[in-house]
Length: 198
Image 1 (cartoon, rainbow, N blue to C red):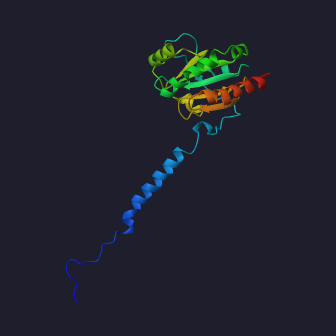
Image 2: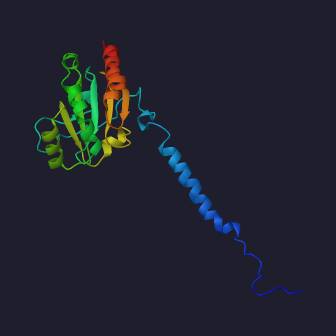
Image 3: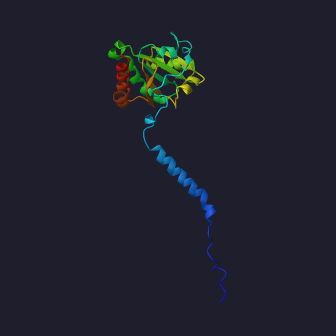
């Protein structure tokens, strides 16, 4: 009995044709897993326990005061170095916490200095940002080309470093400062740096 014209065998899809779809699904799953795999602020920094890099930053153009350099972080005072930019939305969110550190009378009395590293920013925008949200910095330096940030091992903005009085990096906060990490990590790191220098 001969097959009827409509009874053709079912066409099979070759497995090579499915390979791009399988690769896409695997990559999408891996990407989703990495996105939800933890807190980026817990990334280790190769600079913890090492001296601050050799750098020199001019003051933000049009702002009073001076910039700063590596030598200003080796003057015996504990420093909080904050990497910020006017175009950075999380920088706006963390700014009240920087103001809180800067206005802490006990930290002021202990000689803690606040230093800003203005990353790849237009000076006019940086000045307006600080005028609008307040200026927590004793000094703010401009890193328009981004070279100093690379030397500091900055992943992105904002980031905050606690530096001992001898220029040793004691702590690095990746991402914005929050009430929780200020209380649980940054303030204890400042206290430990103060004790180390005492």
